[in-house]
Amino acid sequence: MRDDVEWILENTQVWAIVGLSDNPSRAAHGVARFLQQRGKRIVPVHPAAETVHGEQGYASLKDIPFEVDVVDVFRRSEDAGQFADEAVEIGAKAVWFQLGVVDDEAFRRTKDAGLRMVMDVCPAIEWRGP
Image (cartoon, rainbow, N blue to C red):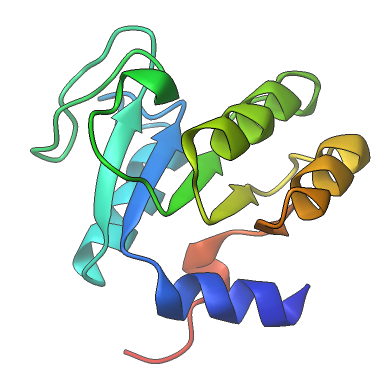
C-alpha cells in the first residue's frame, strides 16, 4: 500500500473530497486546506454543494464537469464503498479512504478495476517533503 500512497501523492492533481463541507471543525476541512497548500486542486463533494476554500462544491461525483484524479472519502466505512464504485465510473485514477474508513470489498473492487487505492490513512500524515 505504501507504493500506492506515494504514487497518489506524487502523480495526481485534482482531488474530489467526499464529505467536505464549509465546517472548519471537521477533519476534511483541514485536510483539504493542507492539500491546497501543497498545490493540489480540491473539489468539495457534499449534498449541500458548498463552496469550500474558494472551490465550487458539487452534490455528487457525477456532477463534477471535469476529470478527477483522486476520490478522497471522508464518510463512514459502511457508506464508503459506493464512492469507490463511483470513482471507477467517473474514470478517477485513485481512491483514498481516510483514517478509520475501511471497506475490504470496496478495496478489492477498486483495485480489480485498475485504480490505485489506499485506506485508513491520511495524506496530511503520509506527505513527505515540504
